[in-house]
Image 1 (cartoon, rainbow, N blue to C red):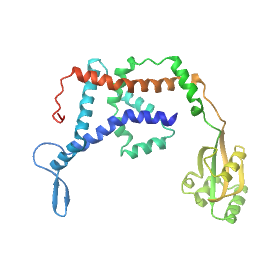
Image 2: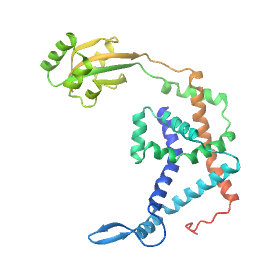
Image 3: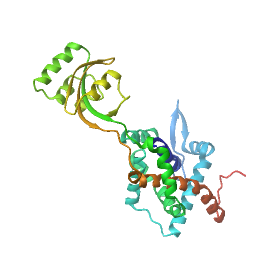
Image 4: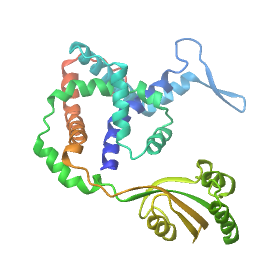
Length: 298
C-alpha cells in the first residue's frame, strides 16, 4: 500500500512541480530588451532569446497550459473564499511524506527531481486549493473504506523486525580480538566507529536500524533474530566478512485494525476521488472562462 499511495501522491504533485520547474527555467533572468548570453561555444554566443524560443517549441505550450490551470484554480478558490495558510502547506507536506516508507525514500524522490523540501512547499498551493475546492464533492463511504482495508490488510501489516548494530571486519582473528574487548566491557558503538569496515553503519556506532527477515544475508539474519534484546552474538561469518552483532530492540509482527487505519484510508480514497474529479472539473471551468492562449495551435 505504501508504494501505490506514494505514486498516487506523486502523480498529484508532479503536475505542479514540473510546471514550476519549467516556468522557473523560462523566466529566470527574464525581462524585455537586450539579449543575455546564457552559453558560449568556441567563441559563439547562445542567447537567452534563442533558448526561450527553443523551450517554447519543446514543451512551452504545456507549461503555459499549466499556468492557465493554476490561475483558474486560484480564481475559483478566491471566489469561494478559500485561503492557503502556511499551516495548510505544512500539513500537505506531512501528508505527502506519510506516503513514503521512510524519510530517505522521500528525500530520494526530491533529489530525483532536483528539488528541496522548501521547493516542494512553494509548489503546493495549487494542490491545496484544488483539494479544498473538490473535497466537498467526494463521497467516500464506510463500505469503500472496509473494502480497501480488506484488500490491503496484508500490505498494511508490518512483519517481525529486529534492530541491531554490528561490527564488520575482514578476518576471523580481528573479530575474535574485538569480541574479547567487548566481553571485557568495551563500548560496542565506540569499537564499531574505530574498527568496523561497514562504511554505511560505522559512523552510527554500527546501528543498522530495524529490518525484517529477508533484508540481510541468511547467516546474519539467523544470528540476529535468534538473539534477545541486549544480547551480543559470537563471531558470525557471511559473504561480507566477520560480524559481531548486538540486538538493541525487537518489534513483533503486527496488523493494524480498521479503526487504526480508517483515517489514512479515507484520506487515500478522497485523494483518488479528487484525481478523478479534477479533469472534468477543470474542463468545465475552462469552458466558462475567457482564455486567450497565443501558443495554442489551431
